[in-house]
Each structure stands twice: as structure tokens, then as C-alpha cells.
Image (cartoon, rainbow, N blue to C red; front, side):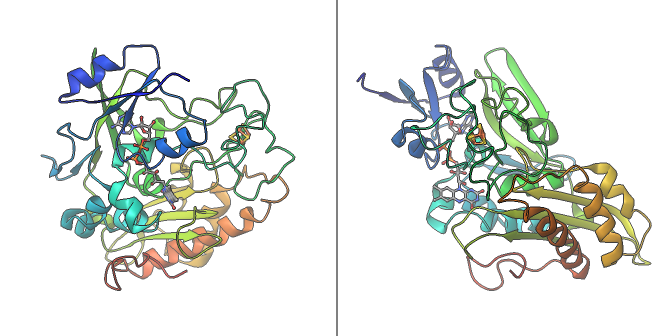
Length: 345
Ligand SMILES: Cc1cc2nc3c(=O)[nH]c(=O)nc-3n(C[C@H](O)[C@H](O)[C@H](O)COP(=O)(O)OP(=O)(O)OC[C@H]3O[C@@H](n4cnc5c(N)ncnc54)[C@H](O)[C@@H]3O)c2cc1C
Ligand code: SF4
């Protein structure tokens, strides 16, 4: 077996130059996903480039009143940053609903976006998997599907994206900023992750020669007082979402909805958001009946695969409950201890 080589990048240019070897090199940030994949023989890079020395760990205001999150800022530092906690409590709650304190201390923001599915067949090198070996088949279809997708799946893959942070970033309309040797570009969050289609091996629209440098949150003052992240899972902590919901409301003085955002996690290959479903709430009172209309619209094309049929009614109830929690007022997710959740389970 060829040994893996390891190097530290001092600047973005040298990191990007190292990528120009046709896919044999991988960046490593916190290593909390990549090392697991390597231990299971799912990822087999010939060379690792440690990017932790690059200057992308800051969290800073943007000129228009938004916030720039460095790709190398740790998930914990992001969730506990006063500007995130005060101005984007939805994001803070979503991050703190994920993993464990130790993992969040290591996990980087860029790595969180790029973490791979938790489909157990994907992690089992002894069985086929279209995401791992294109064209080999999908044993999840007709197999064990409790964690799998109910929306946007294909005949080639029914995996879900496992991130909590990304569900909040989708609801907040974030932008992912990337750099390659040919320049920089910004990717709207809705365009960052992709549905599996007939290429489930490709999770997102980041090109193989690109580095994520930062994530930009637009101003979201209007949602500060009315947002909630609800995560439903098999264990109360240290488990991936069966269904999660990031909900944010902007309420007018008369109590009606001026703007609404709802993104659903654990149900698709990417955070699931439909602006046309959100617009059903505009000008209406925040009520369970109206929230149910949004849930029905978001889940219109939902389809179960046997063991995950329960996710359809679960997601419907979770969407209504997250919107009710948001309407009642943002819960300070850090008021009850460092590992408290944003919404009651
Ligand atoms: C036991 C366990 C439980 C977990 N539970 C949850 C959970 O409940 N919710 C949740 O959301 N997450 C959960 N996670 C996932 C965790 O959040 C991710 O593993 C973590 O965010 C990945 O970040 P990292 O910096 O460690 O990435 P790494 O493992 O270092 O990298 C992941 C991938 O991203 C690439 N990469 C990293 N940074 C960049 C960059 N800047 N530009 C380009 N490529 C880059 C790497 O090459 C690699 O391919 C869990 C993880 C574990 C191990
Ligand atoms: S659902 Fe996707 S990741 Fe899971 S076995 Fe099928 S192809 Fe692989």
C-alpha cells in the first residue's frame, strides 16, 4: 500500500497548487469526516494538505450589515460568537444541535458543508453504492431506509445530507465563497448542494480545484426575534436528524407575516427549501392552520421508501411546530447551558 503524504499549506496559492494533481490530493480541516472516511477505506487520498494555517478562520461584519464566516472557523467558535448568537440565533441553534461539543470544537465551517452522507451502505465498502462507485447500484432502495430521503431522490440514490448547520444556512440565504487558481466565485446556498439525479457521486457544485474561503450571511435582523431550529432524532444528542426544520419569521406590527423562511433537513440530498411555499404565509396570521399549508406545499412531492414512510407525517408536524416556536419568539439556545438545544424536543 502506498503511504499517504502530508503537508501543511502556508497560503491559499500553495494549497490550490497542490490540488492540481487530478484528485489524488485532499484538503484536511478538522478531519472529523475525512478521517472517518479514510478509516473505512471510502476516501483514499494519496496526499493530505492541512489547510488550518490559512487565514480563513475569522468571523467579521460585512459592509452591508451581514456576517462573513471563515471556512476554517470552528463550528463551536461560530455558534458561540457573540455576533452569530445575537444576530443569527437560528444558525447558532442549528450548529449546537449537531454532533458533540468535542466534534464541534474540531469541525470547520467549510468541512461541515462538505461532510458526506451518513447512509450506512455508503460507509460499508463491502456493498455496492452509486455514490461510492458510480454504476454499482443502490442497496438502500428496497433496503433499510429509516434515515433516507423522502424528497428529491432518484432511482440512483436516496441518501440525505446530514448537516444541521446547512439547514440554517439555507433558510438564511447564505452564499458560499470559493477560490481556485483561476479566480474567485460566489455560490448561492440553494445552488451549493445538488440533488442526486444520475450522478449521486457528486454532492455539490464545488469544483475539484476549488477551496471554500468563507460563507456570507446576509443581514437577517428581521428574523432575529422569531426563529427556531427543531431537530428530531433517535437519541436526544449525538445523533443525526431524522427530520430537522429551520424556521424564521418576520412579523409586522399587526402580527401578520411579512417574510417567512423554512428549510427542512434529513429529508433530501440537500436542505429542502421552496420559496413558493414560504410565500403562502405572506400577509397572513401565524397560525397552525396556515403553517400546515406551508408544510403541505413543502412536502407535496414527498415519497417514502418503506421504513422511512413515517418521515412524511413527522416532517409535516415538525414544520408546523418549528413555525409555531418561531412565532412565539426565539429561544436563547445558550441560556440553559452550553449544549442546550434551540427548541424543546
Ligand atoms: C460522531 C459524529 C457525529 C456527528 N453528528 C453531526 C450532527 O449531528 N450534525 C451535523 O451537522 N454534523 C455532524 N457531524 C459531522 C461534523 O459536523 C462534520 O464531520 C464536520 O463539520 C466536518 O468538518 P471538518 O472540518 O472536520 O471536515 P474535514 O473532515 O476536515 O473535511 C471534510 C471534507 O471537506 C473538505 N474540506 C474541508 N474544508 C475545506 C475547504 N475550506 N475547502 C474545500 N474543501 C474543504 C475536505 O477535503 C474533506 O473532503 C458528526 C460527525 C461525527 C464524527
Ligand atoms: S442511497 Fe445513495 S449513498 Fe446510500 S447506498 Fe444508495 S447510492 Fe449509496
